[in-house]
Length: 163
Image (cartoon, rainbow, N blue to C red; front, side, top):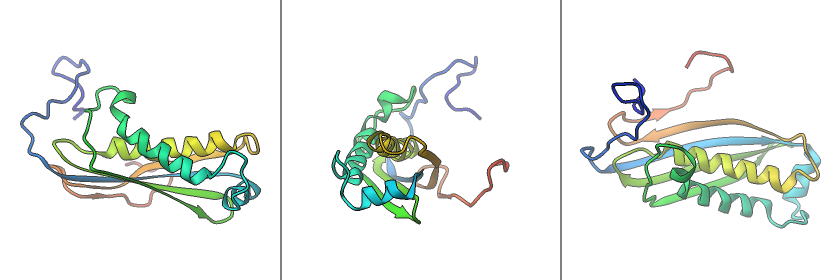
């Protein structure tokens, strides 16, 4: 069932008034693939725009806090924690993991996805002058805890598989 549609099929914000306040958490990831030389530049601290990981981390945190301004029908949430971790993976990839938490009436999956996505976009923006061929991949929810639907953990899937 699509919860953002009313009985006439019109878009609406889900009413969470009667939902219990519970502890909720979501973890999302994204990957940025690039030339090995670009990753070496980032890791070596030689990027002329500064510490790429630090800027991307801050961008991801800010984005999580503004998700309701970016995604129609998202509730504004009082996040209690946002963590964005970035790490080199192999010689050509940055792996981003965003974790959002709150005590509230609705989940934080969109905030975690937004944090991971904007951190990835920030890496692209900071490094596009040296590597326009970068790709942003594998943006997805890894885990969701709390709320009525319970605990969700992603399983590995091959592109094109049914959900």
